[in-house]
Image (cartoon, rainbow, N blue to C red):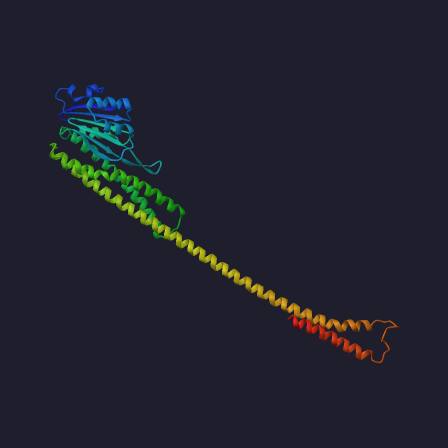
Length: 354
């Protein structure tokens, strides 16, 4: 059986440690003030045996059997059923982990059901047993001690989350736009939301216990401890609420910084593109001017080539050439040259080459 410890207390002192549940029932031991049974991950049959022994309500037993319950406080007749979500920081994984503790609290008995190794209720039991006067106050004293242990365990988690948020704020205020920051913000926000779900119901649970304290004759010392637990729980929930607001604002700020960085990068790209376009336009204009100069040079070269062609023909050393000895050959050749040059000039001028 997944029974970690089973103890019978009289006047706050352990008088028996029964090895079976049957011997743990208060009617089995004369003058029993308190029976405290601790279970770790019990199977359904074991829970059914506990339910039968202490006449536990089937709905509460069903919740304890399934696990994965939200933190809550419910009353079934004369029996209280509490679900607590302890939390701790796993150094090896670098994440916040959550456990689950169910408490069945009745007249002179407490049954604790754990679904995780933490918190160490065996260590808590040793602390409580070291104070017999407090333990003699009954099952309400055990309940207050367990609540105190769970809430005290929240403090280191709060500090770890605060350190993570401070690191993120330092990066954001330094203007560092790192993609890893966004991922870390989401991770922290997820842990904070889970932590908030675990811690937020606790103050209401403690207030409920305090409201019923006078009705059920809870000792003043137990009430004092419950008020101390309430004070710590309220401080935790207030800080967790502020963590959520800070991370949501950090996420908005990081998105703004990323947007600004993207806009700046886009502006630089646009400026570079405009500069490149201007350079291309200047090169195009230079090429156009160069082309215009080439056309002019080519046009004048063609015009000057025309008379050279005629002159070259008549400069050849042939004895028999038409119009070689003609009286009007020279002026006709000159006029032909001028006419051809004029025609070429007109053509090039019309095409804007000149």
